[in-house]
Length: 116
Image (cartoon, one colour):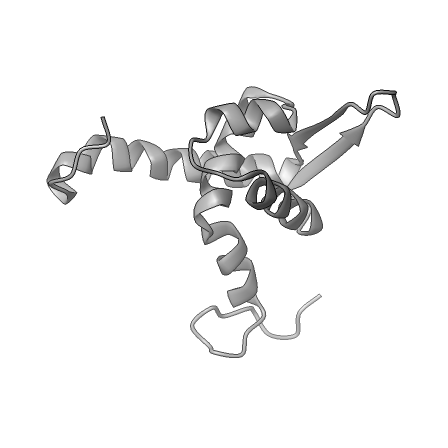
């Protein structure tokens, strides 16, 4: 597909856009939660303190656009929609979960602030 391998260290490389999407703080929180299985918007809102409905919607749409999340609309009234990881998103979620675990394990060494 590419004549040259993508290089995120090159300023004009389109791979930087992908890094921005997956490195976004809300993406880093949404993607691992979907490892638990399909979830509705309200379920995600309850689990991610501080995210607004607008930011959650934007994040899910962006992740869907990059084929990381699949949106499943059941076509019911009232509307019922859930989000699940695509196979590509699942592979990303395992990487992000490793990062999450690293942060949890090393938090005290990195910060003097408390989140409790």
